[in-house]
Image (cartoon, one colour):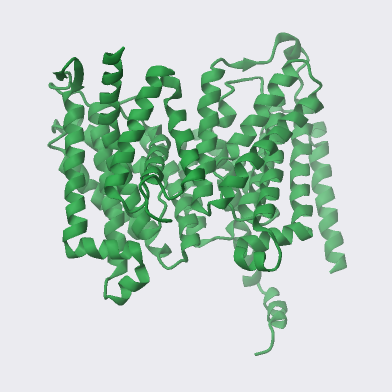
Length: 319
Length: 293
């Protein structure tokens, strides 16, 4: 078991190191842009998964927190704040919003939380569109020094941080509490695990990381409408990437996000929007027939190839 | 000052009737099956394009074509139910709500993008020879097609109400809403009731869409907005109350048009959503709902 964990750790270090040195070998901007987008999606899907996958609360307003992160970071950063401070504000304010709406929203179960968050995101979407209808472009002095590399590394840092936080949260006592609440809230409550407190914690962490991802987006993008990051498409992408990869796992959202970005890119070269039709169908199929996502396919293949069957049988209790 | 308010009130009531009829469809589906079909707005959009195609390709008058649209939507409803939703009947309620929500959301995305390919992103609408006709009443203008749509919505609603109250099938539907297990024990085929409710909901959405394409305009991406509107009206009206849902639709329509009159059109959507969040938090059983739904 120990050797296996060491191997896994080595693999993770290797992947991060490879991503860190990638720009030294690949000089093409479009590849770096694609990698940045993949890392952004990893961060978005993994942060959604903390609440949606582990706590089982379907948040259909993830774009609200992502968008709020972009809005604040962009304005503060262009207003002359140091980038780190702008990023921090862009991550903390979404947490405050999540806590304010979380307390009443979690009293409503299941569907109502999903609808409520969807409505919240649309309120922000429409308000931002009304309040800031003009495109936000980087001023000339920022453009003169614009380089892709720092953006890429910021996306990498945010993605690694998000996955790391999700990992350690899930391994902790709090993470066990989250899953207990997801499986059977009443039973968890009877054991002294507060459902509301755990869900609020997951919502807050999820919102913080989404806001941070938004901040990175604000730092990266040269010109966009302030409304754009609030578009429900961001929520949908995160939800679909998480489900296709495997919800409620650490690796699932990563695989899902990378898969999503690559397929989207390949299809976009040929036909626009076709990727959404294909992903929509794929997503429905996963929800209906394959709740474990691509990860489940992988483990099924592995067990079909043999080797696994023995150890599983041994783990079963007699009788 | 009073005349423009009356005019906005009239417009709000007329559009509210369509909100009501579309939301009754959603409410019927959710109340009976506990399927939260968030592609309801996209189904409505498809109904709109069905009416639009009938008119532009085959020159079928939109009001004459309405039964054809409903028939097409019934077929679509059966297909969607059998293909996507039938398997989820056996799940416990919480799982059912969540999974249908996710499936509906994927379905909405697919339908929206299919519509985008078929009909492009342009605003479409049906303009007939009588589209510009207006009924004037003490200075307030009532566009003829919108009044006709409102009346149709009312008639359909009344017929639906009678169906649910008087017929055996209608009673079976209401029994299933109250307690599906007890309904099964009374020899009601719950599977059939589910299918019927889902198909009725789809047909109502399609009908509302066809009426929207006559008095207003349709776009492929209208689905999310209409899904939210119907969800809002459903929650506002309270589950299981058809008349309550219809009245809630009119309340929302009036609230929207009065806000756009006082605050500007940009804020009409926000009022709906804020109203919705308030009701969700303060009175989740809805304005007219008796007990927890």
